Length: 280
Image (cartoon, rainbow, N blue to C red):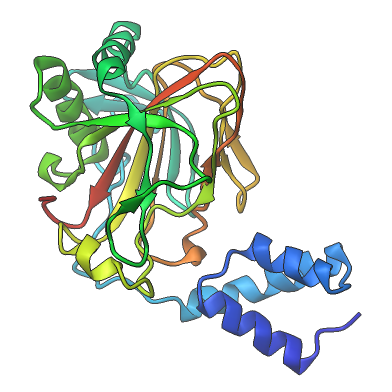
């Protein structure tokens, strides 16, 4: 098999539209291309797509926990009320796996405060900028504002200190519960500039620029956070977290991620999305 001009143009157009590489590979295989050939031509095309990706203005930074809070070398971070250990990190994308973000008692308290408020989780309606029920997300959850309780204030101040990002630039802390069989299919957290509902969403504080997922319990089976473009799977371990940032709303950030199905027990997480400016 060879890469024809027509196929090359199709790949370029699909990447420019923001299509996920794994979806394009499936489409190529479906029409008769060899899977290894499909993967190779997509890998070759990715650098070109990154060059064409819309860059964020130089005036917009993104959070980076390693920016200025190293306590004891590159693996220990100083935060407002303690220290957090870096277990692993990627440069592209900026991604860190963190240990000890929350204590066992804090995790249990968040779960307890959330239980009476849980509702079926919704996703962003890309057309209207509102929310909708989506079969791709089979969890239930709730939100807490920054100062809703002493517990929430302490945790939110720690997150702001960890990420080196203003507390007011964060969306309310979201608590999610996944029962057995529940999952969240791979997705991006930024708002796609091509979607009709995006202007409404970014009017509330600008684009999302980073995500912090904190694990509140240890699922008995499944429930990992996966990053398909990186071949990375982060285990859900109580008190640990995964942080990743995205400097532009484009698949070239390689921040496609999802939550695998819980096969035994249940999974609880807390998620903070960070915006360019103050969220309102």
